[in-house]
Length: 326
Image (cartoon, rainbow, N blue to C red; front, side):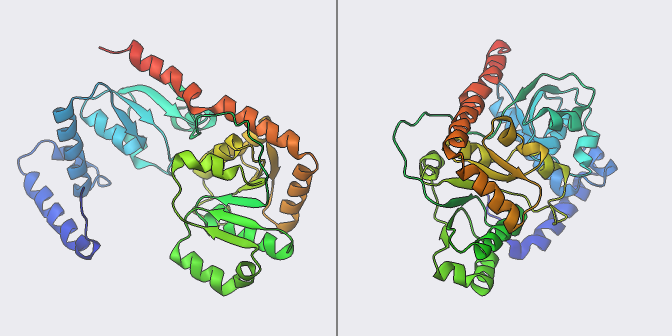
């Protein structure tokens, strides 16, 4: 466990840079970092830690998460699988990678692969952040709406609250983290929803294995991005299949989601409705459409969950590792 005290952040940064400049006088490994301004002295120590760890542990296979760690493996002449999670705008680390050290790629969709590796023929595995599908035979009495995940503006949370205000008969449960600033805003602007029990917040921790059984209590789930925010209006969020989507599928919960390329599984399996804008009226129309044929949409969610089940999608990668064992 590394303890980092932010009160002394400036001091640590200063000391690291001083040590880096001193080390650069006689250590050849610092040259690449000196020649590339974006690789600060701080990152040099991360690089050194990774190098030391790999020398000590001598792993059978390396999985590098995103471009910076792939670049570090490249500098160490180490083959690695690149696990792509977040696609950054103008990723300076990605631009420095030559991809010669890539053994394989794990990524969510072909669209995201082409964005990163257009024209390159790399061994690729498409794996979603989905649970292992377990058919549930027990009947479930489903009630209300569910917002799963961090309750903040970036994920359309306040659009959901505006929907509740416009349709007082609706009840929505939040299952996920609610930051202090958002709790204060809810108390200030939406206290009536709490008082009338239209909004129920359950922000206690729930183990990953318990999430899908918990979600089975609800009828319809929300999966939104707020593209009015500049930090969300990016290729990463437009193309990203949200992890909560696959949890809804596994629980048989039809989805109202924003219409993006990353969430097209909703349309492909007919698991809910995609909407173009996050207005109360658009959300209402989607909910009514689902309720008019609820059992159909719910059954299709389970079909999608079986298709994306993690054990099935990860097996080709496991087979690849076993085949290439030394």
